[in-house]
Image 1 (cartoon, one colour):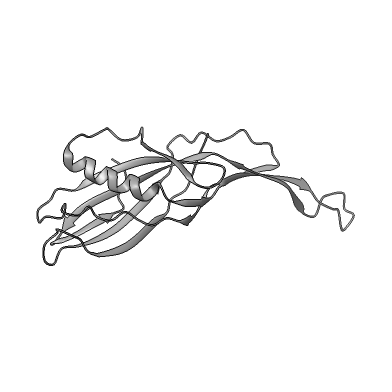
Image 2: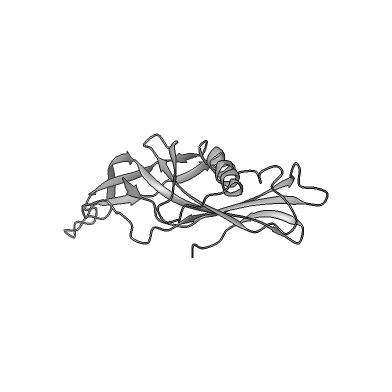
Length: 177
């Protein structure tokens, strides 16, 4: 399996959350975390790894009834396994996060897992290129040609932080500690 590299963030207002009380609203965001020691594939000089590209990534809703003034922030980090077809086939606990227990954390983790389970990606690929023609006859190829593109399974670690700030619930992007 190949680790995905890069960083992306998404934001979505989610409106009034059920059970949150008057004036409490949710905002959702996530971050794709770069792998500290990526497991990069063994590539030849003519190959390039292309990370998965998100196509449909609807964000989780702030859990109904969990929005309360003075609520402490809750962070959830998951690892998603993206198969060759671009679908998320597994949602796992990220090995980069200490496992936390408690009813409140379980509710937030479940909201994340339910949302990301349906995400779709253009799958990660390994592209293989060959030297092209020597158009100007100088002894060097003037371009390269894509001769193969193979989809590969990969994973991404995602970080979500749920919090209430000034009476408003939100999920924000935050770097891991």
